Length: 157
Image 1: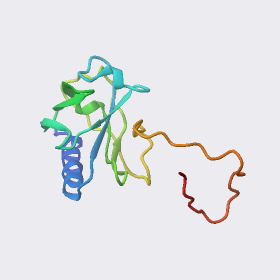
Image 2: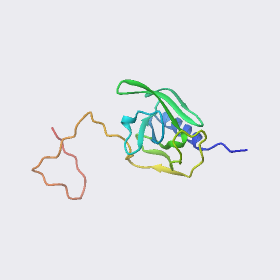
Image 3: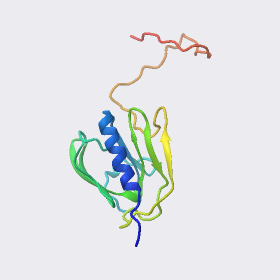
Image 4: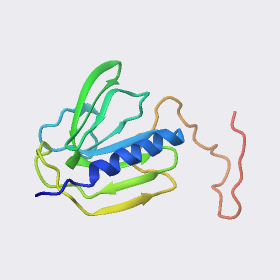
């Protein structure tokens, strides 16, 4: 008798914890093979997906696949990702979550394999896309760059 992998259970638990805490769960997927994801948003072979209940419709975190519908640039898309391709699941606001080693295969394997796990708890996730809504003004040219010491804030108009 084969055992059921633990990864889907951990994914569901982390998603539930994020939702209970009011955090936004983000899913990082290693894109390989024929996956049903919007390829125009894939960067460095990975895609970061917001899988909160507010951002998705018909979210199903199954034992073999993660399935949901979401809007990308105003267009509704059906997303299907094999559990084996999930690299991490974390809370956007705190960075807490879990990461897994990518599993070998073409990305559309029928049965997920158990892989070693490592906990992730960072101050700020590096995999988040940067919002392009508000550009950040560069510092004025006449001020020298700060040289260590105590951090301070200044008002920029």
